[in-house]
Image 1: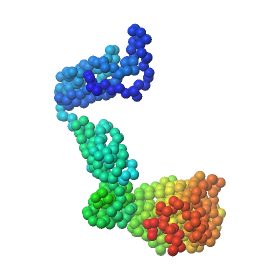
Image 2: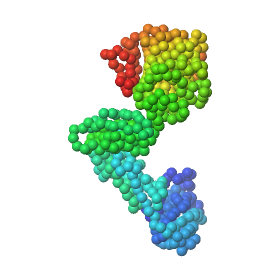
Image 3: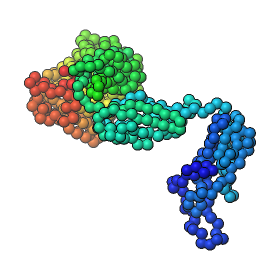
Length: 505
């Protein structure tokens, strides 16, 4: 309500209790008087209101306040409102009884332009999604904190609240408007369901610069392709081009039906053995393995070897095998750094995931593991199937199926010793631990091989094994398979094989 300004009453501004009603005519009234804004910008000719809160004895007052200006040539007071006259700066004093507040007013020669823009022209949601839209208010090209007012033009499809959150009620298309002062914008919200469109891939991984073609299956009509974030991946006629690291969704749409493919983009792609060894040149990047690699006859040097980087300066990035395999790695081939070998020497906050290690070999190994020597990061969804592992004859030495030392996370991993030649101290998952850790949803398949312990040396530290199983037969594996494996693994009872990563099929 406007009268000599905008009177706003807000209970939350009362941080203290004002006095009760007057006990007698002589008792002074309690006054609360504050400006809501201490600065204001007007263009020449623009009229503005002083915004304030005036409470007398805890009640909103309709009393008039006094308004005076330090320079009426810059800003004048007309009928209780301020008007910009010429470019410049003036102070406006606002008073009520003995209370005086100061308002700083800047007058600019150029008209003030407000702009409201939705972040997207089109939004696509499933009915069950947590949906919201967002519009940005700009003043003279500068983003502000002001909030637009939203409106839905078909509330039977979607309602919208003051924060832009949508209540999706039915499938269809609805226009959503956003308004601030005289500025206005509109976007289109599609509430859709699956059906009528299919994609040959629902999930794909690649590196920056990579291109992968998606094929849409549909009955008739034209397919419209789009990406949620073109800074991560663009799509043109089904060809997805990776632009920057991150995740986004790519859509194939036909009418109100659509299919979605999740796209994950890594920094670097690995196609060759040389590409793999180049990880050592950048231990903080993200990598995706684009195909199987065979290391037969290759002198293997562990990535981020302990003797080179130390325990705290290992691999800090992400290595995603994308369901592919590293084959025939011989851990005993490196002698210059001793025998503390693994595919990765040290994971120092880094992650290794979704990779199959097939045909792993090593003789006279000390402090070695199937994936890493020291895990101070994360290893999950990995399949390790050694061919020949001989651990050095010493009680302090042990080969761990996943790691020699675990100080991080090991989850959803399978170690298959069923066809391996084994000698010495062989642990199912880990040789040694030095801190309290938990192993979750892992299987060690011995195949009648004598694997004494899941953890060889616990160093008197508490170890939690959650859904960790040691199985001598494939039947035992199937019977003890954790439910969580079904998200990432494929079981094929007809072939009588261990679970395989889905992308490895």
